Image 1 (cartoon, rainbow, N blue to C red):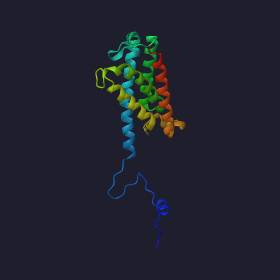
Image 2: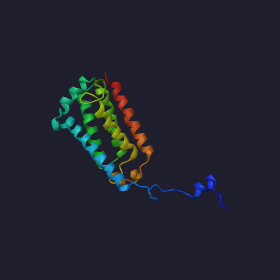
Image 3: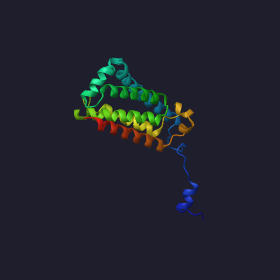
Image 4: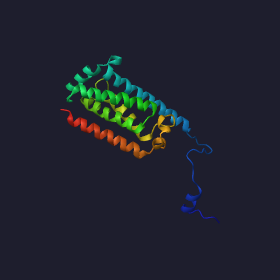
Length: 189
């Protein structure tokens, strides 16, 4: 009579998550990749548009001068310089997220910028228009993309180091984004 000990059973019955068994459903890897693409495009292009408001005054933005005044009123030193840094981070980080280029770092750039935005809106409650809900959602989305990777429909697939995304890359990038945000917040009055 065959043994049914746990060690024998575990060695002979490996179940592949991609293999469907009778009565079970599986998720197509293409559905996963399409979902990540949609998230990257929505989040990345939204952030790039916000950055272009700061840098160029597009889409009703204040440009460097108006945004610099806002940063100064919010307690940041050198408001114009902070406007340029935030604008470049949002624009370049957003575009990189959208195309899936250096995704962990692009996500970290957005996380760092949004942590500072949360600090500015924190006293206004949770809900928009004065609260932090929007900024929290953007931060969580950027961190999620940094942790999961961009999916197959991304430029990172052509970069040997990032072709096979590792959780460690995402964690390290998010930590860098949080530390950078912390340093900037320490400069704030």
